[in-house]
Image 1 (tube, helix red, strand yellow):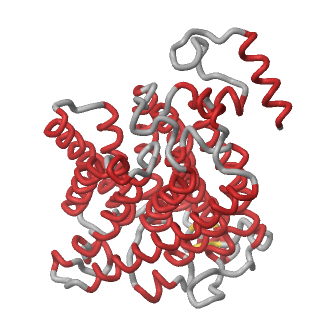
Image 2: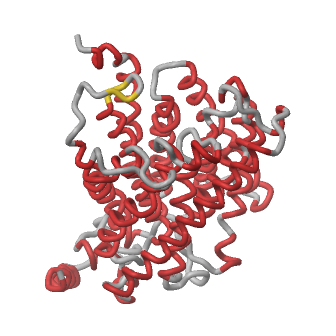
Length: 436
């Protein structure tokens, strides 16, 4: 047995293999969650935006993304090097902690995949699919990879210099996706009929199924970030369950008080809001802290999703209201509820740690949010200028499923107007092929 093989812990490796599969499952779960929230004419397009992100981000991550994010620091905590480009220098005997490095790289890949897919919810119903194919790999390299290095990479400035804490991705996953979603929906402009037409979710059972798969996968997301089958993983697992529950209850309480009806969409959204907020803090707060974090996210995010109507930005599926706002809540509350038995020393304001850690968390939130927004806005403008980012008005009106993919999700037709005749579908399909 080689020395490297002796350092590999089979229990830790087994858990991380399972956690990696759980996190990958979150992207199909997100596809169902988003797919159920849009109207019937864009269901397949929404599913495709998530599924194609798996392929695009994987290629980019293996080619250069992992190396830039987790390679040795090259530029003052800003980016890693290309020593591991293509993973060509890594084999089954290479070890990261107590697990194979190849497994660690794959685990981190699943985070990058779902982060890119999350953005699609902000621009649902109106973005060109071809433009999305260009945007995703560029965004992964320009936004996700640098932020991942700042937060988790060796020598990253947020981790090593600032000292802000983020256990499982509040900064590189939730805040970058939320801020980027805001930037893209501003570049695109609102959907046709925004604030005029009813744009209700077409399939709430699908939304609930997607939320359930997300919640299931989130245990791998958070508890897997302990990188071992240990007590910290168990604590993160329990915190994740607790925060999801209080997030759900908090959202339903607001709905009942404000609207008089607790809804299935509210239950799904509240659970996700609680899970978003506990992501950065699950390895830093006690069980009491997790309950409060989830509750705060459920209540605040239930109001935040309505900001788009007041501020006139069309965040189609509430990526800003849930992921950006929830990520900010969870990241900041580390500075309040961090417990030394979880962090190994760092304490939050509630436990006598003062305002120092809260200040560090705030700096990290502002820096990551501003960077993600600025780079994404510039990238969106560039793609829009070169090839156009928004679908044609006729395509948007008819639905992207038929005009882009030449398919419909349901046999009974689009928007409940009956099954489309072959005379209406075939010319559209031929038109799509002729434009390709």
